[in-house]
Amino acid sequence: MNGSGSSFAKPGYEPGPPLWLLAELTYRCPLQCPYCSNPLDFARSHEELSTAEWIEVFRQAREMGAAQLGFSGGEPLVRQDLAELIEAARGLGYYTNLITSGIGLTEEKIASFAEAGLDHIQISFQAADEEVNNLLAGSKKAFAHKLEMARAVKKHGYPMVLNFVTHRHNIDNIDQIIRLCIELEADFVELATCQFYGWAELNRAGLLPSKEQLVRAERITNEWRDKLAAQNHPCKLIFVTPDYYEERPKACMNGWGNLFLDITPDGTALPCHSARQLPVEFPNVREHSIEHIWRHSFGFNKFRGYDWMPEPCRSCDEKERDFGGCRCQAFMLTGDAANADPVCSKSAHHGKILAARDQADHGALGLDQLQHRNEKASKLILKV
Ligand code: FES
Image (cartoon, rainbow, N blue to C red; front, side, top):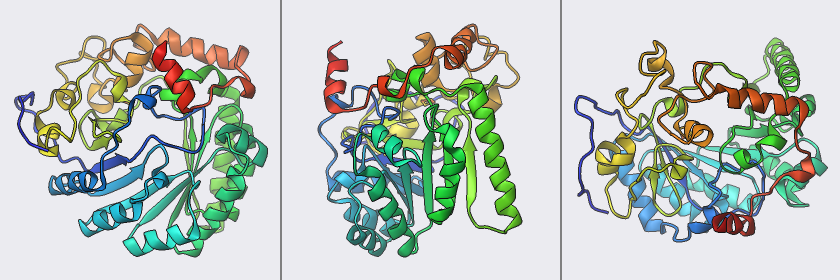
């Protein structure tokens, strides 16, 4: 890694440190979730960073002030050097978090990660119902194994987050999902309605819940929150609504190149996990230092500040709060990443969001019509 290259830093704009580092260790994954946020063309990415290259990334980012490190993928457990990477990250002083499907996890691994200093584990489930879970995951044994591993994680004394990506085929079972999380002694439960990136965007017509489903799910979650609070129960429920039912966009990544740094398996550095699809040149850690990438690269400076914004964002008095929303969503829905996120009712493209809501009410696709994420499908998509 070297630090050379042109500087595209914006005069007068001094970015803070990349506080939150996400290491997408691999795109390999034993599951096939149709809402995976990995890029559709993940099959293009082969040369994963080596153990030494990852540790060098951690070192440089830590030197710049990164404090939290998430190990993600694909499925990070596929990497045989995971314990070594955790140990190196802890040695550098990171707070470390493993984001996993639980598939490939064993009690021995949980113990070895604890020894390496791992702080926190997040296990994702597809549903609280075994059949639906396994159908979505594309694996007959997934649900039983996840249950076993969630229990093992608690046995080893970790704080545990259970993550349920909710969508139109599981959100009506929110009560059952919450009961399962309480039974598994989750400390935090993320009930995150599907956001539409990667494979989820491809399957949006089969995933977006109707407004009625969403309102009911939020009401049930709030009732559970009250019940848990009355009992002083430690389990915390986090409910995330999808952008598609908002009138103002989210401040995606808390602003472009502001605090989030994502490194993909082949070393491409991104300001968010979805940015690789944008027609923007992004740097690679094999060619540039993290310092250069964060401060001077073209990709990380492209949407910093406000001068890149066209109308309606340019003159909008909310731009400092939401930064015009999500660049990736703007690109996917309008073809131009600089446009206002169409979630915003001021966007000229907001009709696309309204049409998607209408489809969720009247023309949604069934569970059996979803395109599962897998290498073969990714290669076919590459050829189209
Ligand atoms: Fe890329 Fe929002 S996901 S900017």
